[in-house]
Image (cartoon, rainbow over all chains, first blue to last red; front, side, top):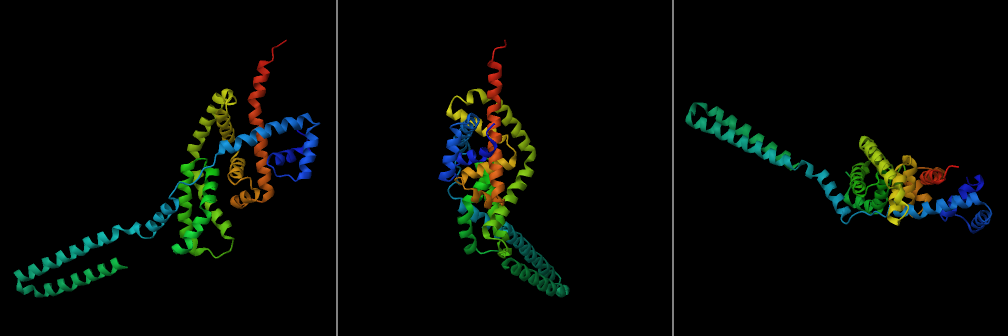
Length: 134
Length: 177
């Protein structure tokens, strides 16, 4: 066991964090204290091994670009599928409108259906376009 | 949402420090990089709400710490397994580890894995940040005195762990009279 009042100082000595005056004080003490010397030996071993054990990991090249791509994806790309789905609805609306027109052509009595079909289809189509653009 | 013009310089300034913080908590380079990426996406989302109530560094490191610690909690079960493995490996390798430099490095990693988390984080970050107590304190959001206390307790514990098998070996080597 090292001397209580020198324990912290020896640890800071190993970390090279002492003033010149404190360094000399620690060195003078260690020259005559076997326990503190043994403590210093172990701590020096740890001090030498720790940086190697921990290593110097670094970010891989292109980290910033990858983050920016993620950010872009979060901002826009996440909803990429929406316009496609809206298109499907839009074309369905057109097809439905065509169906109504065909029916009106086959049966002139249902011209009212034709007018309704055109209006509903057009309104649907326009709202989908607007939604998509937004 | 924050503009790219504000976000990019912030990321450039803090990316290495956030990565080192994540590494000190997770202990794996690839996982730390993935998490650092996660942290910056969160920062980008939160940036419009930043009103300068804390310094930018304090704010960034708080988000980074919370993200890393949440990740750790999610991985708690896996971590328990990996620590067991580390312990078994430490026992198996402790004998020859001291004999070559690479072995010593492995031994130290295993000993480090056995330390309480708070000591391990401080110790790891201290060496990643070129022995700066101040930087560790800012990154982990701890007072300077606490950083030194954790650092030194961690080192004393490492010393005790390192000496334990040697003392045991010496005790077995003494012939009984």
